[in-house]
Length: 133
Image 1: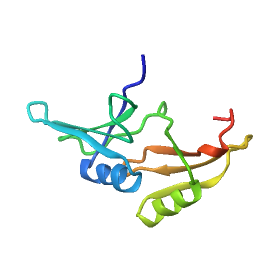
Image 2: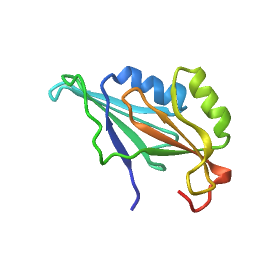
Image 3: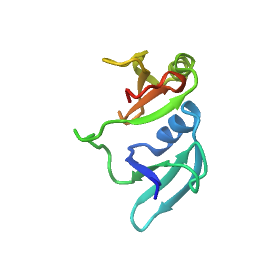
């Protein structure tokens, strides 16, 4: 068994696709409109769905806004150079909400960014990772 995907509901699919592909460097793997259900599914990720976990971005055509529940935490992405990654995200119009640095009560270097819908994404410096996260 393995995790196939995580689904996020998004308000503006084009804006979200631009964030995940142009800023975070994921690939659009597939996209399909379901006109009878009035929604679109777009799958993005760093590798093939058959080999890696991906994100499913769900756009319900008639929904204007969502509230992010208290149960949602974040998505974590490993990066080789967290400082240059955060600089690129900021320069590309992304929102870094916690600058890179050691996690509280630990030594792993982390940062947090926010997607256009307010979902949190944790960046983890892969060569600094310990058992902290």
